[in-house]
Length: 62
Image (tube, rainbow, N blue to C red; front, side):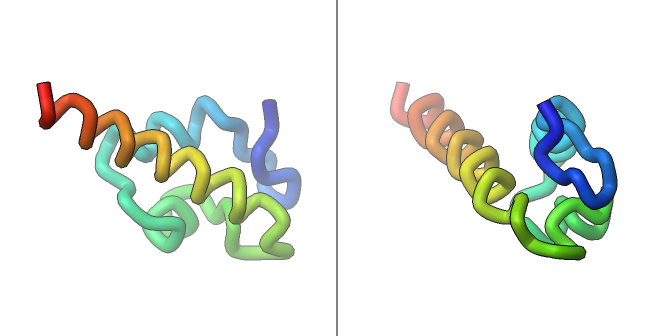
């Protein structure tokens, strides 16, 4: 599924950037430009970042 239509960036690519260390919407944008044009994908990118943070938090509690 495409997250950023302006630059053709799909969810898989953004998830990979997050796994590789992107921890902010600015870092994602710097790596692939998603979220830097019209802004309609920013909420979805933030959601993916929040999912990663929640997963990291759950793993550290175990």
